[in-house]
Image (tube, rainbow, N blue to C red; front, side, top):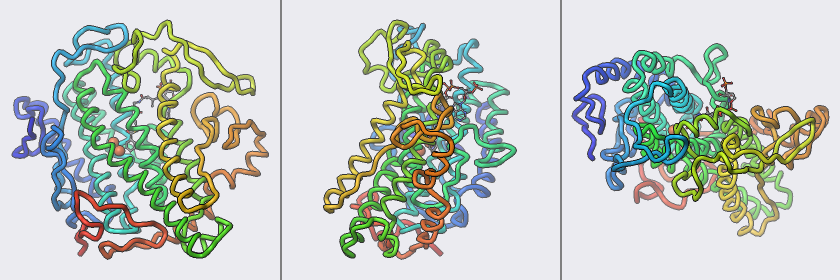
Length: 474
Ligand code: BYC
Ligand code: FE
Ligand code: FE
């Protein structure tokens, strides 16, 4: 199914057959472009960037690379191929054909899920808008912009669903996507993590490693939805998501590698000393991990959630890889064990899996996060250095769910407020950490050159060398 590029809005949904929808989206497009110019990558609006654009949704077709100025990027609406005779895989409608339209009874719930998903996409573009100015290399600058244009496209994906299936309410929601802004005290983005700052490139790599990974798990759950247009939209988004997490995992890995190299080169025993040589010390890396993991863990909602149970029973949002799980897909009888915090004590609860679905997804996410830490630790080990980066306990630094009621160390021990305050600076990035990392953020614009604090990538993009001209400055 190829994409029609002769249209103002490239798409594979036969947009030209639906004039009402086409007009609604064409009316929204100029506002989107204005938003991109104002709150998208600052200072790089009129330069050529070597970007991947989808030209069709099959496996070969979406990896098409060319130079493009970002405001001219062909943002469009691409749904994965329909699956013939697809049936609802879980919940009370299990076994019935999937829906091509939204059932009236689920209208407001589905709209809310789609709005929550959609709101994160432009939020991340806003959070990253200043990073171009301090890029560690042209390779990284290009990757930042690739992530940014795809997050912009993910907004298009959700706005399409809103405009196509939710009438006037949908159009209003589409407008509001561009009215809320990350960190705006009056009109903030919906979810916590998307109002945090992304002030430096280490934050960017952590964000794309941990927070984009929440995206992976949420999109995968929505890809199971009985509402087929949502499912197909999310399946295609997931192919793009993989690159974002690659940028995060390899980005942090390259920082770890460079730190190891500097420690070896200067024969350092105390990791803190690497700062004098312009590297990012393991302690700082650990504090960034603690922050970004905990903020991303919040994005899964409360451990026990009737919202999540209702989404599941209605068939709106499934589990990760729902169809690969061998059970009744109704979950009324399934028990689930989870940790919680009650009467000021950590407890283990056995509950119905149905109400524990947020926690189940967070557990899946956490296991996936650990894989990257294992790879980063392997780099440290290969350099014969004695340090281990760790994921904090799920109770640490939470704002959402049962653990938000207490203070916990990164190991998960309950502590008093005053102990927390005394130790906070060794657990979370401090002003001083941010200032140090910021002091390293000097732009490197010669193709192939890397900032001193990060190792080069193993290879370039699309078979090109690392010193390829990924961005044509000037
Ligand atoms: N911040 O039952 P509960 C991505 C609210 S990332 C603020 O615990 P529920 C991306 C909740 O709304 C993927 N509020 O939670 C990544 C509820 O409010 P009401 C984004 C929060 O509803 C990087 C109340 O607390 N996609 O794509 O089961 C770059 C109690 O609710 C938060 C989605 O999130 C929070 N963290 O689950 C770019 C998927 N957590 O009802 C993009 C769609 C909870 O009391 N969203 N609340 O007013 C969902 O599935 C669900 O809304 C959530 C929350 C999982 C987020
Ligand atoms: Fe996204
Ligand atoms: Fe992403």
